[in-house]
Length: 431
Image (cartoon, rainbow, N blue to C red):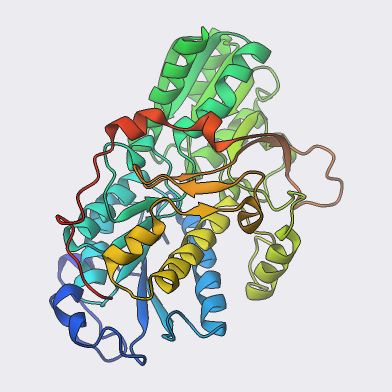
């Protein structure tokens, strides 16, 4: 399948390419009705993941998860007897690019489904375009609470835990264990702000206090000023909502200054591609995740083996949470199409809404489901820290400390803020 990087300039100037010899067209709802059920017409998925920008590493892992799910489905005959094809365009960790990529994939590349995102700003931009056309969009890895809250859409399904889920898993226990005086380090964009807001609310609920919040611009590589303020303030806990390459730089500098053990650090969420290969002293503190390859659960070892067979040249020798989310989202989309017996978007949406997924099938501790009111996957949330006893096994970087049931970390605020469009107001078509 084609994996294409497209620049902002190329999109702005309208540069296009033929895909499978098919020229640009006006939209799947007009073009596909005539022959959507033809067995020789592939089901086409647009992969909307970053290949550059702050989340390039996570974007690559996300993409591998989707592609493995597609390859496995094709090996079994595809979906509804139709081959599955995909095209990838780089969303560049930029909302404007994400919007243009989504528009192109739908109107020119014949994609009936869109999958992928790490940045919540990019995911929100993609979902607005997708809703306008009625194209189902799976937000695989962005975790701002607003994605299943005020920015929810009938066509969008959110597969990662969000900032509130992770904060609920960590805040109360951390207050009890470490103290009430907290400082916040917050990436200065949507996900960071929304995650920090959830942390503040929980601190107020459980008797904690925010003594200061330091905003970290995206692209920050020098954290010396922020770390000096932390040293001077000497809080009980530092809660960091810093992601991607910014987090890598932060962890390296905290470790260099020996600050990782002097203060309790809580990182809202730790994506595997951000830390893979870092020294163990860079993995200070407690952090959240949705999955770990070292879980002693049925199916995990086999899943890791399939990953290694599919990607023998990949530097990251074991899959992480980002790969996992991309894989699971794509697998469940294809299963929903099969159950629906059609690629009609409304029929597939109804198959996804309220979907119950047994713990064993998801390789987690508790059953998961898709909330029909917010379209977010409610799932097990894990807390982890550095595994200091891994020995020579450099891949085994995490030690899982606890797992929370989905009901215990549910984001009730998102449910109150989400107003899904009606089925009638969502364009209907067969992909």
